[in-house]
Length: 266
Image 1 (cartoon, rainbow, N blue to C red):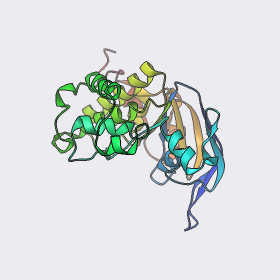
Image 2 (tube, rainbow, N blue to C red; image 1 turned 60 degrees about the vertical axis):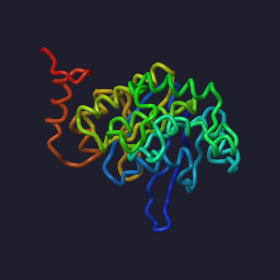
Image 3 (cartoon, one colour; image 1 turned 120 degrees about the vertical axis):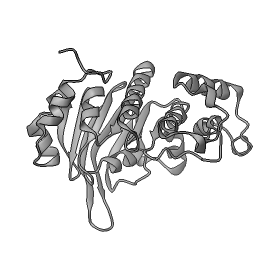
Image 4 (cartoon, rainbow, N blue to C red; image 1 turned 180 degrees about the vertical axis):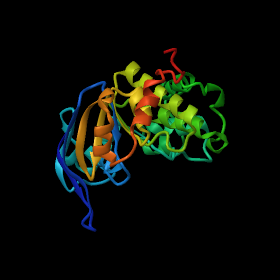
């Protein structure tokens, strides 16, 4: 599905954000990308959809080499890569429905998008998505009237209405309270399972990654230092990724809680 081969990004300052990263993600797999600030997590996601241009290396989505595409080819390929942002990236003055439908801009012509005259099939799909995330009743509200969790749900709908093959999720819970963070992570994972979507979720919260995602990639200074099951994130691995710290408390916290976020009976 997604394959990275020796993907490297060096900025003009000489800082190397990614160092020859090799990674394969099969169809339908959801993985968490963890690591300290500056490890290259956001850069990796943005190199995949080329919001950041890699310095060298290659990336494929299926049979399409993303790193070799022209501007026109890239616009077409981006239809199949839904992006969910930390800061939501909604248009505040537009309604919830208009923000969701903006995910179809890559498919409709200029004048239709300019006048916001979308095909009825797109409108119907938007209503279904809003119903799925529990916000159907807010379709006509402006985006600036919503809470953070509601905004993130709209961002998820906007990404999914693209009919993507891959979700790129950049810190979806960073601005949310703990309860809402769990709800958003659970929703993303459930939607990926329902639609057979692959996803890369860049996340700082190790406990959330362990609770909701089976595969975890650990980045440190632009290199992959861990690739395995979330259950294998022990103190030694977390020290390798983040440095010295008392990681037992984090590990025990996850062990004491079930996937629904309730305290287990044991």
